[in-house]
Length: 118
Length: 149
Ligand SMILES: Nc1ncnc2c1ncn2[C@@H]1O[C@H](COP(=O)(O)OP(=O)(O)OP(=O)(O)O)[C@@H](O)[C@H]1O
Ligand SMILES: [Mg+2]
Image 1 (tube, rainbow over the protein chains, first blue to last red):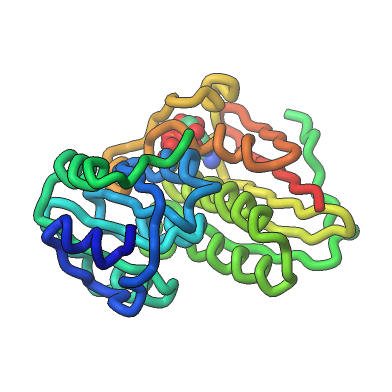
Image 2: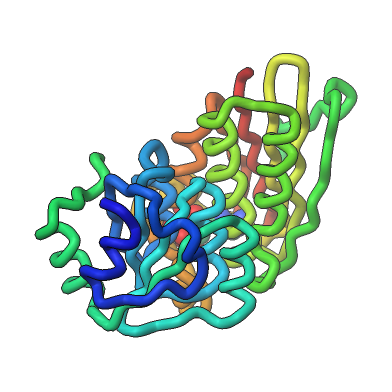
């Protein structure tokens, strides 16, 4: 699924990284626990989008360690400026959606975006 | 406690030390970020870089959230990379319990940042080829992680 399509499906907006909206992703992972992300996303990180309710810089650091390049913040959250800047430095796409984590996951899953294989 | 773990700095082709401060969430992860960049510069394999990044970051965060502060050392040797995480205490009373997936004593401040799944130590162990942890109540925690090249 293209990032642009994902943004449309989620009624969301791109906070930063508009230039990567053509990029294709194959998997998604929903979590507010960074160690779970680090443990389970690894091999598929480059083709994976992270869905989360956290907006602090450790989310970006976690994504950076894994080369994970797309993050969706749920419940209309938008991270603070310094967090956006850190993401920009790391060539990431940040997206905000008004939906909850549950609904966001459901919408994308319903459209065929799979969870990361464990 | 006898120090079974001895750092062999003399064998290192390159060695870098990073101070990691207690509860410094603003900078937590910057040591790991820098180490990852250095690994890229020396042209390591992508998958190896990812393993190093994950275990270094987990170690760095543990120093930030559980310890009085410490140092992350990365050493490039002829046949391997060693990452050391050595802090100033307060140590771990039951190391085996701490190594159990899901066990965590993380405080609210750490949980709010997304930590406290109790997966950090198991993750570190899984990412490296050799993992040694040495700790006791009231002592420093010393972790040695080896990636063979
Ligand atoms: N450097 C340390 N100093 C003192 N205690 C530690 C240290 N590292 C780990 N611990 C103890 O071991 C427990 C398990 O650590 P681990 O990294 O596996 O999980 P966590 O840090 O609690 O959560 P997570 O890593 O999933 O965010 C910690 O909750 C803490 O009690
Ligand atoms: Mg941890």
